[in-house]
Length: 198
Image 1 (tube, rainbow, N blue to C red):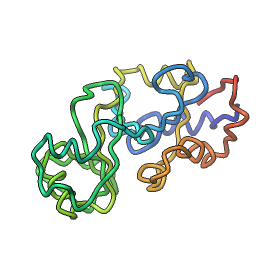
Image 2: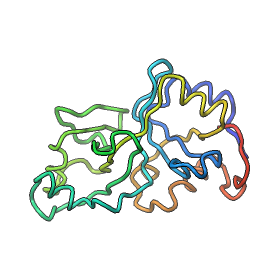
Image 3: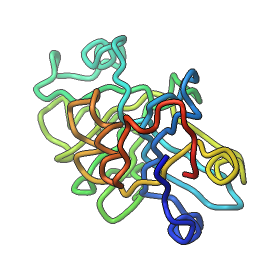
């Protein structure tokens, strides 16, 4: 498996916030196989939280969810993708979006990315407004302090990849994993049955 320089790993491990984790073959056969995770928070002593951005949810769909939450207009004027963000608190939703919109309960992740957990943003989106880019994500992925570092450095479970608008908000979910790997010069066909350092 191609590897990322240890210097790059050391430099970015202090905080992976705003980066992508891309699953290696070590995670094949698990619920994280071929996932791309946008990191919303990470500190070496406080753990980490991220959202899977390449696993669409079939049910409920966006219209069903907005109807359950009694958000109008119905049907919505604008639609966004609905994703499974991970196995933690799957009933709790977040909107990961570009920072051109902010609400009272919005948290700025990076200069260009914001996370909002209030219904206000869903109403804005349903009305055809809101941020330019947005994903609605149910649940999240979480790691205790030191757990993610161990998965990366000892178990070779993840590649660390710079995030781009296309890798986070692109609409072709089937190719996001391959595109993320290609962005750091890794050929997915060379990964089968191998493991290496993330």
